Amino acid sequence: MALKICVVGCGAVGSLFAANLATLDDVEVWAYDLARTHVDAINRDGLRLTGAGEVVGRPHATSAASDLPSCDFGIVATKAMHTDAAIAATAHAFADGCVATVQNGIGNEEVLARHVERVIRGTTFPAGKITAPGVVQWDVQGDTTLGPFEDQPAPFAEVERLADACTRAGMPTKAVADARGPQWRKVIFNAATNPLGALTGLTHGRLCERPDLRALASRLVDEGKAVASAQGIELDADPEELIDYAARPEVAYNHKASMLQDVEARRQTEVDYLNGGIAEFGRRLGVPTRTHESIWALVKGVEASWQQ
Amino acid sequence: VAEMRRVCVAGAGVIGSLFAAHLSRVAEVSALVRRDEHAAALGRDGLRVSGRAEFTGRLTAATLPDALPEPELVIVACKSLDLDAVAARLAGHWPGAIVMTVQNGIGADEVVSRYGDWRQLTSVTFMSGTRHEDTHVRYVLDTATWIGPARGTTPADARAVAELIVASGLKAEAFDDLRPAQWSKLIFNATVNTVAALTGLPHDPHFAALDRPSDLGHLVRALMDEGKAVAVAAGVTLGEDPWEMNVLATERGSAHYPSMLEDVEAHRPTEIDMITGSLVREAHRVGVPVPLHETMERLIRAKEDSWH
Image 1 (cartoon, helix red, strand yellow):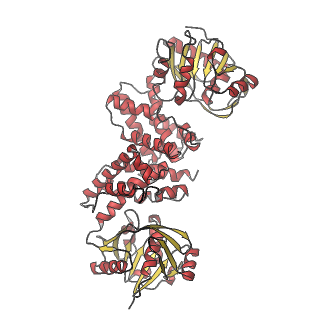
Image 2: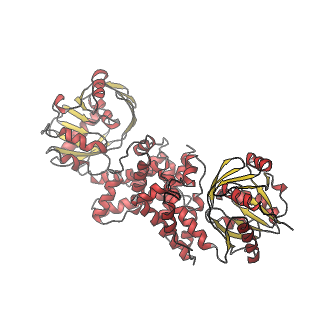
Image 3: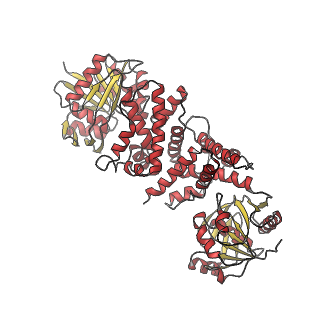
């Protein structure tokens, strides 16, 4: 019997999973998204990826949660502030399944666990952007890591089954017992760089060229590492390396962080789940996160200025 | 105490224009400006004030001191970024005059003192307005200018100038020692200007909000606490408490647009160096850590960088 996987939130990252998984014969893929034009284009022409990989997948796309069959797995890929609404609408499809998050930030697993029983902690590095309904520019390939969510874990064999499907589909994915290391590395990287771009308007490469801002990013990294370490989390690599690697001309020098893109388009940002997440964990653990708190407040202030 | 019948206002932006127009009602006023057409327009049309007062002041104007009558009082009202250039143009002129600075931050007196042996007064102004054109300024906030003695002057000189300004229809107050007031304003300005410039918010109730962990009031208060620690170490007893000034100002109802926010929106160079820069330099001199002000300074400088 085919494995049924539903991608919840079919933006750029969700589309990468949905299109690739839909190329497998033994997997039936559903794509749930509220953007009707995207859903209609996928059902009419398939979901097309271009760039880092040329793929056309044919998932079943829908904007109506009641269309979803009972699924073995969910992969939640919405922006972090939409997690609760998205999983509340779709939870019925995962009554017997397991749900993974591949979203940015921390705190998503806790939200999923309020609606479904078995949760998988996840972090993914591939990135892209939707260029037209049904068409996604695949910018960056990268690995995904999945592991059972400690509070409400999915069985490890199930985590391995989902990782295997993703890997066979062309999205290299590892199943690990403790997925917090890669997640915190990515959260710290994002929280140390995205808001600096959003507040100054500089691309990743240009902010790394300014020694004063690069040092500010390091201050944010150090606070993030202290919060991770207080929880006994071992980072799988140093976020500093990722910052310098991404600043290379051939990698992401000219990349405008997603938070800068959000600010320019006056869309709510994910700062609550990045700097806000680190600050909240810091507060609970008694670890000072003065710089994250300040950056968090400034970005929330930017969002508030749009209401003026 | 010298009698002050002739006053020269150097720099006719908002503050300079408000001084020049009002003082022209009680003294012979000249304006030293940067552009020939500005000087010609002021000589031809006078300087109109609207808002809290409605009148047109008459004055002479020129781009060089040689073309102006010798004054007893010079009010240097240019932006701090232009201070060196304006002081250089005054060098060698009017040795008998008292020169009064009104720039934001601390350090303007010292800059002026490098260009001549004038006797000096120092001041901070809380009045504000909007410039509509070269010959029209709108008087918005009728708050006071505070004046104190500096090199070679006495409290009596400060009182004489304050009386002249009050007679002209503006508010002014003389102090025996201005440093407590100057530092209160510096801490207030360094905080409110940078937070407004980075968030896009005018100085409104967001700046005093403390309900949620991400509310801006926490950052505002922490920046002010850093500033207060510097003042203590520098041996200055503050006048008004900057946090109370902040709370009062945000309760006033009409949100004020700090000049740094206007500069950022117009992609003009800001006064970061004279405001936060002077506070950070003083902090380093007295050995007090100011990581949050350093963060704000770096973000503003990087934002300026992003326009190029």
